Length: 199
Image 1: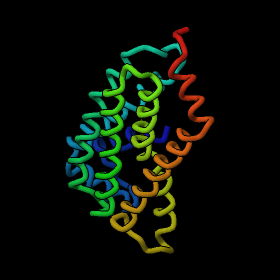
Image 2 (image 1 turned 45 degrees about the horizontal axis):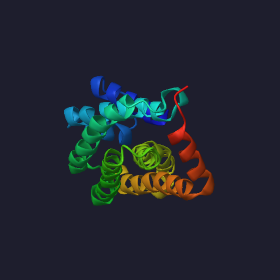
Image 3 (image 1 turned 120 degrees about the vertical axis):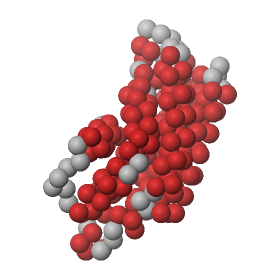
């Protein structure tokens, strides 16, 4: 829900820049507006990826090939445009390093999904890793909210905390999902989802 809300808010801000936004938010809106086409080329496929992801896990679509087939090109566009977006990173090299690391892991995970596509369990395991990374951007938003809310005390600007928020958000998702995948419960759930027949 956060990922969807973030994309909708950004798309609206690009089409109709808010006139009464707080200074820090207005500065961010202006930064994204300076490369609006690239921003849209990144966030709209990401939105489609997020909306399609549940179909990989919903029981009635188990075994259906079309969700994964659509996710591959969408994921490739999201990944390549993320590299391009890092040129304009608000948080400088701290943010850029997080994007480069986690985006590369996202693309590698999708590559493994394609490579192992005839093996249901490893395919679902790697798809779950890719989804976790992609949704890491949603986890950064509450972290950024904390930084924004405490900026009067910390005196940190978005340029100073954006990169930190990216590292925290992506790391939380990646680590939690990886620990779950390696747990007994995670292994059991993945096997059940991957092997269940179409209902």
